[in-house]
View (cartoon, rainbow, N blue to C red):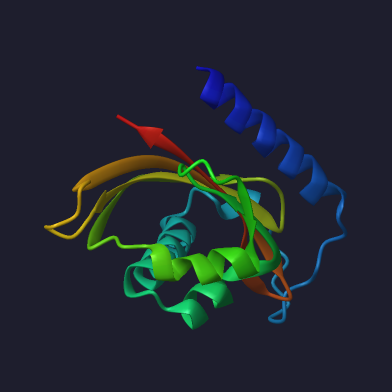
Length: 162
């Protein structure tokens, strides 16, 4: 319960910070707020595709693809206890990652305004057969922001699930 409260406090803080930033119009001239379309399957599918691209980049240790998904002011926190990482640290940490496979479950998209969304999901990671730890399941909360018409990952937070 404490982890949930901490996660929701972080989300509230980020939502407030994002709401105070001036909106950046998209290149295509789209002005429909995400809140008005967040329940549409196309929006959920778009974010699911972004999350899958993120995990494929991690699995394949593809620094270029992973870095392209992250905002320049990205901050992420993993369950390894090493604290917060910025974009450069996170991209460089790919070399230390070793998921062999992964499964995404229960993807939800919650609007945080016109240019922001909170995406939550579970991921079960499978590690190589000779790894000491074979499986790990984490609950993930991500804040995505739309800047210059592109959706970028601004904040990543994972919590270990038993």
